[in-house]
Every structure is written in C-alpha cells, then in structure tokens.
Length: 412
Image 1 (tube, helix red, strand yellow):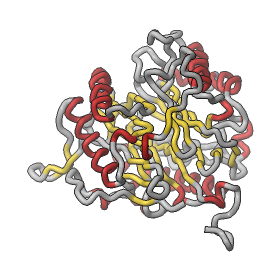
Image 2 (cartoon, helix red, strand yellow):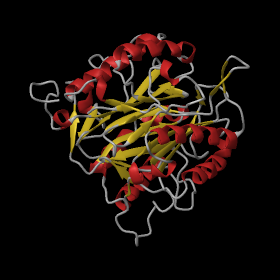
Image 3 (cartoon, helix red, strand yellow):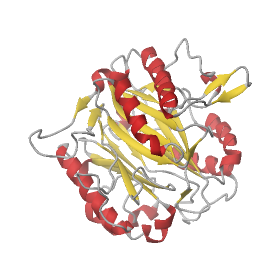
C-alpha cells in the first residue's frame, strides 16, 4: 500500500514540512480514503515570533475546520466528504461542546459523519480548546444502518463506513434521553456495552465485527478497572479486538465514568500476535487484521515478556521502546512502519516537559511519508510509570492483507 501525502500549495498557518507527521494521507488512488492529523486553531504569529492559539470556542473550531478544509481541497475533497470526525475538546472548553457541535454541523453541511467527542485534559498548545481530526472519502463513504424502521440509536449519531472500516459514534452510559445509567464503574460499563451492542445491531454488525475499542475512564475508577475485564469477556468475541485504556479527568458527559469509541469491519478478523504470551489471558489482541486494515492495540513502554514498565521518567526512551513494540506487531502482520496511516499519542503531564524529544524518535523509526498524527494530554495511563501511549492504525498492501510477506519475491 502506497500512501500519498496531502500537500496544500497554500497553508498559511504554519510550516508543516518540518514535523514528523503528515497533514494528511490518502490511502489509495484518486478514490482513496483520506486520514488527517488532528488540527487545532494554532497558527504562526510573526508579531509574537511563535505559534499561538487565539479565540473562543466558536472562533477556534472554525479555524480548525478552515485548516481541515484546505487540506481536503488539496485532496480533491470537501467537508461534506467526512466519514468520521473526532473532536478532542479540553476541560477548559467542554462546557462549550454544544458550540463546537454547532460549528461542525455548519461546516460539514449535509454530511452525517460518525462523531467521537473526547474530553481531554489538554492539548499540546496550552490555549487550544479543540482539535479536530477527520477521516474522509469521496461521497462521504456510506451510511451503515440495517433497518431504518427500527427505533435505534444511530439517528442523531450515525455510523459510516469507508474502505473496509465502519466507524461508530462515541458510546456513553446513558439512556435514550441522555440520562446517566448507574453511579459506579461496573454498572456504567455494563450499560455502555449494552448500548454499544444495540448500536452495532442497528448498524447490521455484532461484537464479532469489532476490530478496535478504546476505553476512556477516570483516575478515580482505576482500582475497579480490572473488574471490567469480566464484562468485556462477556461481550467481546474472539479473536479479541485491539484495545486501549486511557485516563481522563472527566468524560464528555459529566456523570460518565467510562466511554467507548469503536471501529468495526465486515471482513473476517484474524488476531496478530508476535508471540507475546501475556495476551493469552487478556480480552484484547496486539492487533487484528480485517482485510487490508490492521487494528492495533495501544502500545506503551511495557516489556511484553516480563510485563514490567521500562524507562520510567524518560519519555524519549519510552517512545523508542513503544514504537519498537509497534514495529514488532507490524512485522508479525507481514508489514512495516511504512504501513502506518495514523498514530494518536497520549502523553501524561509528567511526560509533557520532554515530549518534543519524541519527534526525533518518530523521524528515525517511522517511514516517509510520515503517518497522520494527533497528540493529546491525558490525566494518566493504566501504569503510573507510563508517560506515553500510542494508538496506531495501519493499512496493508495486498500480500500482507492476505497473510503473506510483502517483501517476498514477486510481491509489491
């Protein structure tokens, strides 16, 4: 699979060519899907000699969409081609989430993308309130609803599919009127998996189609988080999907203790494991292959053999180890770093002061054109030693998708 970087001739906000990520990648030919990095309202100020972020939520959201729109135009697409929109909104901006949604609806027009709304602790630019990450495809992909006569959950938050991936909206532990279901983590986890099952059914899917699921939860729930494994085991189907667990100070709904974001596929799922025995007792896989898509679990600086965190207090060394683990999983799928289309990096407050050092690691270990990327500050990760966790997504070429070696003679 050859990715084409999207390079607008006029992008006045900053010099994007100096970073170890792409503004966006096209995953195929002229009709291919486009995956964009996260974009906030950051722009270079000549007067102040640095990149700044100005404005309230409405102004910042519009600037973010201005940037996204310019990148899409360079790919021959418009905002109405959006398949999925991820809105990373900070704690400082979450009270204005309705304004962000209003701007989104104004900007995407008649499009009805799947929407993931994530309340993050902060963004890499301290004054940023929102960062928008877009996946788009010609025509906006397709709506995925099996039975429009059934009173379901996707009317206001549709699922959409493009190039083998079905994107679902964020799932919160609420009833159809938006009321929180339960006051403790386990009750809410049961509720959120039940609600997700109904969403999947509405979309003509089942848990056996889910290739990736990320749990967002809060630090106060950490002592009970391991107990949710039983609930996941009761719902998720083997081969277990790729997964991650991220701690945020609060979630998109103020009463929520857990939120799920999911991706699925109608292609058969195959677990990919480099031989790491620890996954035999877990409810997730290092990766699952679905057609030419490789859904990968979040990776951090964890030794898969000893199950111990490594390089505590050194985010650059953790980044090196983390991306090394990612490459090991890719190689187990017959792929390499050149197949990465997207990375989402979650960094803790402890790791933030030296986070810039991880750019050199990406430049050295990843392949050009670099994957699209989004950087987010979270409250914490599931191991207190972790300062960085990376959620990767890869698109494979035909040989790797079929389980072969893409570097073997006679393949491309």
